[in-house]
Length: 430
Ligand SMILES: [Fe+2]
Ligand SMILES: [Fe+2]
Ligand SMILES: [Fe+2]
Image 1 (spheres, rainbow, N blue to C red):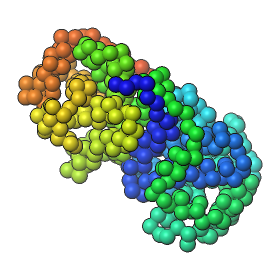
Image 2 (tube, helix red, strand yellow):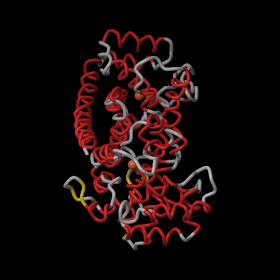
Image 3 (cartoon, rainbow, N blue to C red):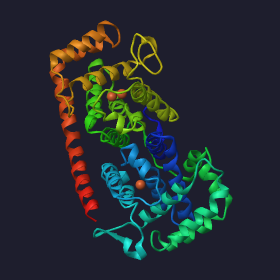
């Protein structure tokens, strides 16, 4: 593991926003479009680079708390009802990672209307001015019809926004947008497939080491966003990360590589962000189509992380967790000789956690049952038998670690869930 290398925080954030936008073709690039529009308005207003950066990050993550496909699709309507739940979820998740606390505060109020200035506050709390920038940018983005030529839409979009100046949107921001909108390149950039490169170039992003406290914190944030989508798997990645790190230690991985293993564990199911919660949460049997959609997730974990070259090893450890040593796994059908040891550890940690964790509809499997299944998979060379026997030898220890990690994650999940329910009640009452 080359641990001295650094990656740009913005590139990781784009991974998150991409994963959530892959949930459906209608929202592909939505986060990046909003980030780009917000950045353009910020530049027009002459805001400082640091402020432009906060807006790009907030734009890239603003709908991260919309867990279901329905919520994502509902948010595309220009006039929408009860939009604050997902904004609050996003805030609650993002603020878990200190370097994004300012961004979290912006995301929290990104659907508050300007209401002739009354929108400077919402339910007694001060609304950051930048939330209004994201609100306007988001509403501009939803007015774009992706199927039609973009320049021909500009006037209609400008008129629709102008009509709501003062009531929905802050007039100062609408004026800035109207100036930006006179330049064709602004519209062409929004519709461009290179929007990611454009954004990435605009931003002097912080670099973080691939094995660093920030990377660990950020990958843990990934795990929360992935897991909290569904009450069924609300603590899964935390369990996998703890188990994988422990097994790596027993195999003799260095301290840095054990940390890398934990990071990979937090991110292994990243592609699940692209799977609608309606399918992840389905209590009944999945149809063939739904089952296939679930199987997309490791592919997306791989393809989304792949462009970040310094993360190469971590990506392989994370994304190959459904590959099997005998070539029967998916999506690459790699065999033992092509699977790094870290990926083989991850596969064992993933199966172990999936079997033993409690789910709302069933209690986790006891030791004897779990060991039997793992042994069996080891014997038929689906999993690495040596790693399985290591797990068997240290079963109590690893199980205690897994439970501890999942109990901690559960506390966070409950906090967010309770706050969300309270907010839903307030939304329903107003
Ligand atoms: Fe939103
Ligand atoms: Fe998975
Ligand atoms: Fe998993």
